[in-house]
Length: 191
Image (cartoon, rainbow, N blue to C red; front, side, top):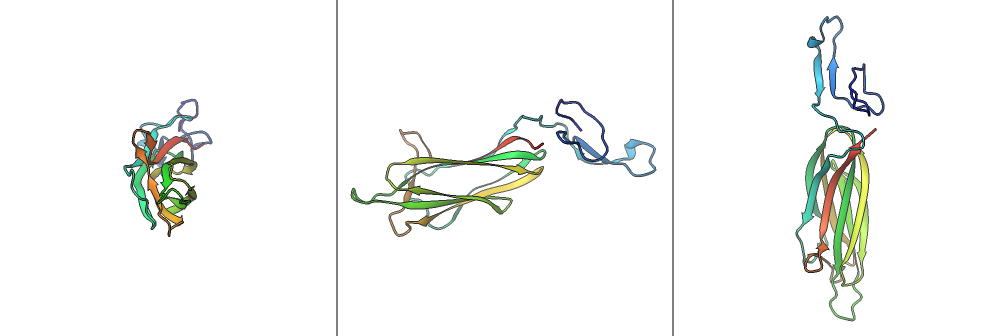
C-alpha cells in the first residue's frame, strides 16, 4: 500500500484509511516463500491524494437550431474506468429556448434530464424555458464510485408544454452558445 505521503508499505489486510492498495497477494498457510503467493491486484501506479486523472467521458451534442424532442431520447452514452475508489463529477450544460410562433405568444416548455450510472437512475432535474431568447443552465453533482469500469448516459424529454410549439437547441453561432454538453471528470481518490 502507499500512504498519503507516497511511502510504500507492506500491510496485512486492506490498506488503512488514506492509503491506496498497489498490490494484493493471497499467501497460503505453510508456504516458505512469498513467490508462491497469488496476486489478485497489480497496479503500476496510484493516483496521489488530491490529484485528478482528468476527463473520463464527454458528449457534446452537435444540435443547433433544431427543435427538441418531446419523447424520451437517450444521449451521452459511454463507458469509463477509475483506477481506484474515486470521487467523480458529472457536469451538464445546456442552452435552450422556447419556440415562439408569433410576437404575442408566451411560449413555455419544461425539459427533464435523467442521469443514469451503471443503468441506475442517479439524479433527475428539470429546466423550464419561457422565452425565445436562448438561456444557458449548468448542473453538476459528485458521486463516490468504486474502482472499475462504469457506464453512463442521460435521458432527455419534454414533460410540460407538449401541446405548444416546443423548444430549441442552441450551439455556436456568432453568440458562442455552449449547446448541450455532458462531461464526466475524475475529482480525486476517495479517502
